[in-house]
Structure formats: structure tokens, C-alpha cells
Amino acid sequence: MKAVIQRVSGATLTAEGREVSRIGNGLVVFFCVEREDPEPLCARFADKLAKLRIFEDGAGKMNLSVTDVGGEVLLVSQFTLAADLRHGNRPSFTEAEQPERAKELYLRTADLLRDRGIPTQLGIFGADMTVSQHNAGPVTVIWEER
Image 1 (cartoon, one colour):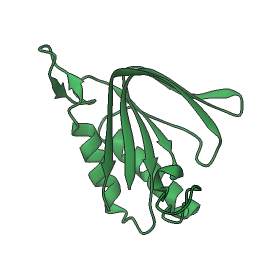
Image 2 (cartoon, rainbow, N blue to C red; image 1 turned 60 degrees about the vertical axis):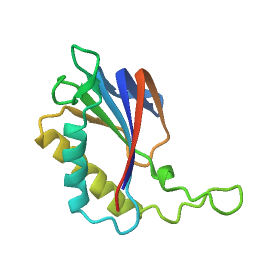
Image 3 (cartoon, helix red, strand yellow; image 1 turned 135 degrees about the vertical axis):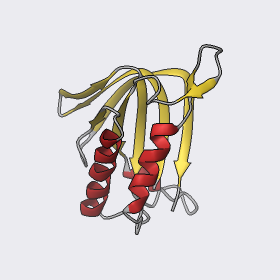
């Protein structure tokens, strides 16, 4: 699994000409399931995201999590994070999981985030989407685990 995690003061996601999701203060998470990622990795990711200290405390130090600040998550499935750029100029996506299983693990991860008390919004799996966000900081981190 891979994720690009961005701290935001707000974000909206549109698809097919309509707004699908909106969050305030929190995290936009572009999320990718790769081939043969085990299901238990969803829980590990949800735990990491719930506890990731990338929000500033009163002293201006990144010491608070999305849970601590009462933030939200916009979880966006993005298979293109599995791109292999080692050969040629066209990305290869052979490391991306098959859509049915990827969707299952994506939805499972969203449920696990909600179970941890984090309001979680989603995109539409497999759709062409537009994300508008107001990055805060900006703070962007990349998480990857196999």
C-alpha cells in the first residue's frame, strides 16, 4: 500500500459534474492498493493515520494527530501511485491491485478510520475525479508498506 498524505484546511471532491465529498480541517489521503497487499495492512494504515502527528500544537510544533485536532479525512483511491517509471516514458501500472480487490481494501480502510472516530469521506472508486484542496503548511508525507 502507498499513500500521499496532505494536511489541509479544507477540500472538496467532484465527479461527473457534482460535489461528492467535502471536508474541513484534516487530511487528504491519496491511497493505492498494490498487488497482493494483505488485508491486515488496512488496520496498520488506519492506526498510523489516526496517530500521525503532523498538526501543530500551541508551541507551533508538529505534535498533534488528526484525531487530536478533531479533523476529517478525505480518502481518495488512486491506483496511479503504483506507477513504475523505471523503463521508458510511459508509466506501467502492473503493480496496482485488481480493481475488485483494491476497492474492497479501500472501503475496508475507510471503515477502519471511521471505527477510530475519524470522520471519513470518500471519492468514487474508479471515477474521473477532481480534488480541490487548501494545503496547510504545506505538509505532505508519503507512507508505503508492503
